[in-house]
Length: 109
Image 1 (cartoon, rainbow, N blue to C red):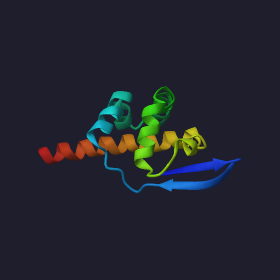
Image 2: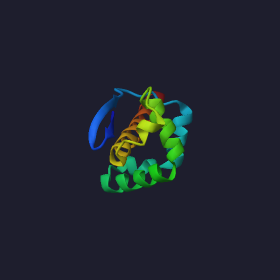
Image 3: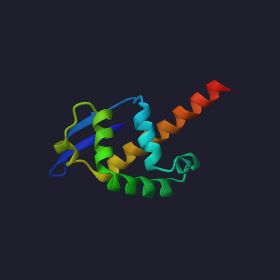
Image 4: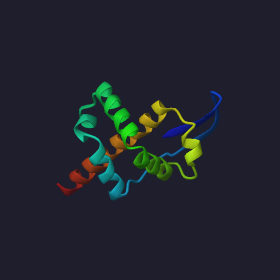
């Protein structure tokens, strides 16, 4: 996952995270914010629309999640990111959440 920080249209910094181990509370927050069935269906247009709404309507939780994923990122830097890139990260986290839940379910069977 990547999140770029911009200044006057130029990338000045890029945060990267290869993996993200979700804590239960974060998974719970995500599942309360988005319809996980839409992620599973793979309808990208619907997914982008839904996640865009979630990001806009839940800024504080999204900021906290981004700060947890990208160690060291600041509120000021988050102000200088592109919304579409935040949505992309959030979609990746949502897909990862579904994948992790499915893997746990398979191990239990």
